[in-house]
Amino acid sequence: MAGKLLNIGFGNSVVARRVVAIVNPTSSPMKRLREEAREAKRLVDATQGRRTRSIIVTDSGHVILSAIQSETMAQRYEQTTFEDQGISLAEEGEQP
Image (cartoon, rainbow, N blue to C red; front, top):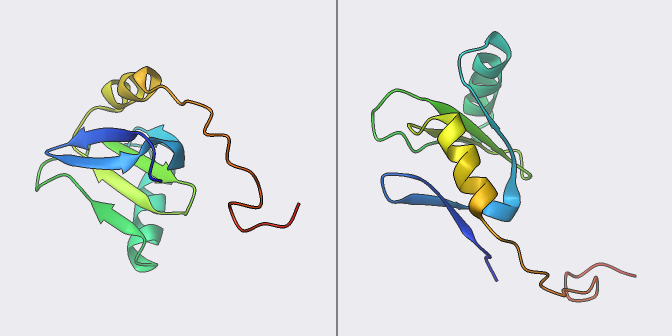
């Protein structure tokens, strides 16, 4: 079960529950994060050749580049509703 999707622009989406952070790409630490993800093959470029305006970090360590402003992405994320799925630990394959 994938869950709710967050539109990151140009027909691309990510699973909203997996998003850890949505950040502005202009600072030096974010530029380093992008390069480290590229070297580790964890970078997903969803900008369609346009300027990167936000960076999305997922719980799997993947870094996703988007051409949508980080403020707009945050608003979209806040509008996403998460229903309690009632998934037990046993269903996720973990021992209680």
